[in-house]
Image 1 (tube, rainbow, N blue to C red):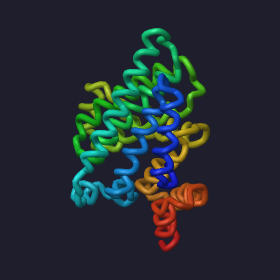
Image 2 (cartoon, rainbow, N blue to C red; image 1 turned 180 degrees about the vertical axis):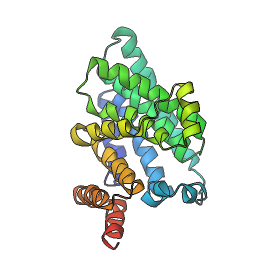
Image 3 (cartoon, rainbow, N blue to C red; image 1 turned 45 degrees about the vertical axis):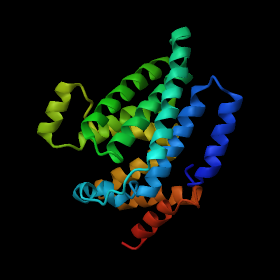
Image 4 (tube, rainbow, N blue to C red; image 1 turned 90 degrees about the vertical axis):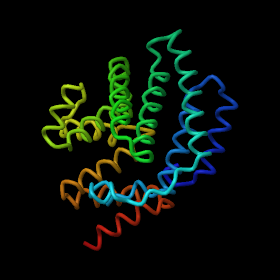
Length: 241
């Protein structure tokens, strides 16, 4: 999926769902493939969009694919149903909790970056962070879960001080540096989300005008996923500066 080979990803996840019909992770993974395919089609992961807030808000907004959206939400609904069934029987099941964290994060990403509903995305972000904290209390070595908490800290920490004050009252974590440290946990020791955490750290480095660090991160991603034009394009652009 990180190589943008979505047809192959769909096929892999469909085979897994057929052979493991009670495993929520197959549906969660399939939903992630739909989300990232839309990200790729709509160009929402271009780093300059994340670095330049004004440009991001004024970007052209192609219409979301209705069929992709339907399949995306159907996958997440089914994944949640299976995860909830497991958690009713085994409330400390770390795999089911991880599926719930991912499903909330995927919904938040779709709402924020495709539908442009920031406050609704905040609710998903907070919920994902809360479930991730619960998961990490059970399984502190589930390093992918640190991304959910780190994103909440970092992204909300970027907001202006009065907004951060309001968000603190609302219960959101807004410590930017703490967010970076948690993202690094996933970027160093994660599994499924390790490449995504490294991309987010590259974006964070660019926001902080740390081009050397961003260059290293994007160069590593470009070598690891040579079929992903985004990583190579962003790396080449940094090389030209």
